[in-house]
Length: 335
Image 1 (cartoon, rainbow, N blue to C red):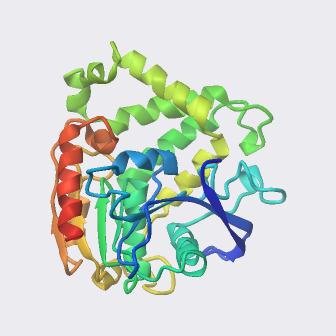
Image 2 (image 1 turned 180 degrees about the vertical axis):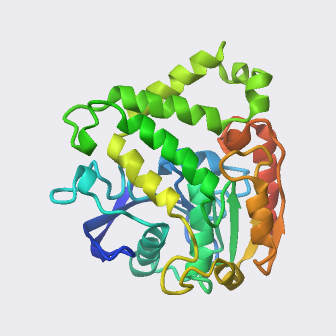
């Protein structure tokens, strides 16, 4: 494993359950400067890992290991941090407790404070669920975060987004080998159905109409769908996917005792300098969600990016214009 693990012990969760012998997997890049002012935190997205986060920074980029101390932290459920696939009985597989974004950020803060001795973060940024964690950080620990840049994300999962996730979940669980998560061999048919369903939402209608899949090496849309099928079969455990899916569905920065479900109060609590960067053709996190949020986040700016790549405009290598715009926005926050 090309990352480190922080042992958290038993962690009380927002649900009232306890995650036993919890572990956070993370990797750092660059060096912490003398006054610890160069910390950039990159959580991972839904099908992301610390390795995939490497596409968002590099030499000459706005986030550069030569200038920043970059911390890439794996989401609970992604197979690196504590997950259904790597947790021992009695919390293995479908018995793994439900994890919220609040729980993730609570544990990430423990890593920073107790292990890395970091008390301030210059920037939290990320794509999709990683961006949702940026919002969560800023609302949960407003005095610790100086700036956030969530891209293709939202502070609260919309009902429409929840319904989409119910669809891919149902496709996976319809496999006769699913066995309510107690499978003895991977539910391959369900995993393929999950990936195939997911691909229809990940890109825009324009992407398919203009056959932009040809630009990433697929002759037909069917070739693209088969690739998404194979990716989910080869790289993802079914229980892990559903654990993270539940975290995504319940994402809401106002959950917990700080705000007691008052979403606007939670938005108003954010002190961090904020740039919100939706993709205008994103089916998961449409720009209307971010426009609403920006009305209540005091020091925020809405900078939408138009792209036929939809949610996947942010995936490194897809839309070079997005990467350029992202770096401009990050530099503005790190001035």
